[in-house]
Length: 100
Image 1 (tube, rainbow, N blue to C red):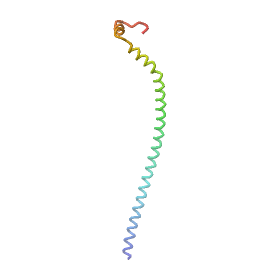
Image 2: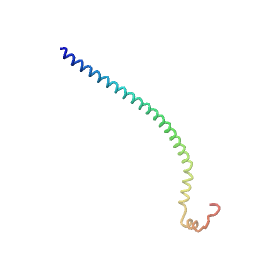
Image 3: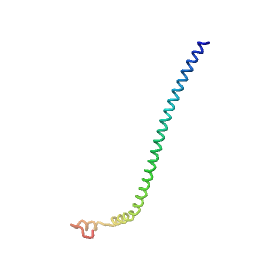
Image 4: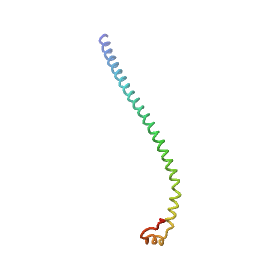
């Protein structure tokens, strides 16, 4: 029975060591995961700040576009209202009038 108990003790000791090794690996993985989580939090905050800036720029751009659209539409209508006679008249000028 002593030989059997010695074998069992050796097995228990081996398993205990394996358990300790697994615990150490788990602790290392947990620390690495915590570090990654910290990095993710920092990056998330940075992205959120950039998102706010981008949204502000988009709002400003949309406001500027809304202001410019009437002038663009008026210019488009003016160009569409030109006929061939008007275009030929413009081509005939060697230099544009002062008003242009």
